[in-house]
Length: 208
Image (cartoon, rainbow, N blue to C red; front, side, top):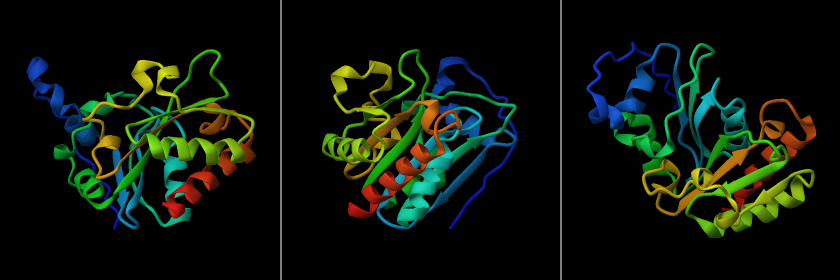
């Protein structure tokens, strides 16, 4: 099952009252594409894909395909780069996202970030800390060129992904938020590293 939802921009704006409707407005923006497929109870998310956090939807989709895992992704067109905080990505605005979160037990949410001095650092947030620890072990072996940080205290607060309303934390077992630097998602690093990352994520999904 795959759904691609397109529509027109929502013009109704009523100040702060509308903050919870930002995700609904994004999904209605021309060119924004929602993609999902329900397979195994392990899922991959990429809510900031397309032009915003480049390569994240591709990493999530490739890993899901290899593991026959479930996938939900939002891709923004080239003329749009709208960052909606994860805690404001409201499942009630998307039947596809609601179905995905109801279907999966655990999830890996793939995000992208870029900070000076962090070009080889992957941050592993989210509320499922057992899965975070397991992911860090698998990824360190698979991609030794990068450093994988799963200590929440060492992750910048805005990148920890632990808000209860974040979709990654709304599944039965919760999940992890993977913050990837451009070197692992946007073609700025070695293709072999990205390949190893995807393979490791797929193995994590199959094991679960």
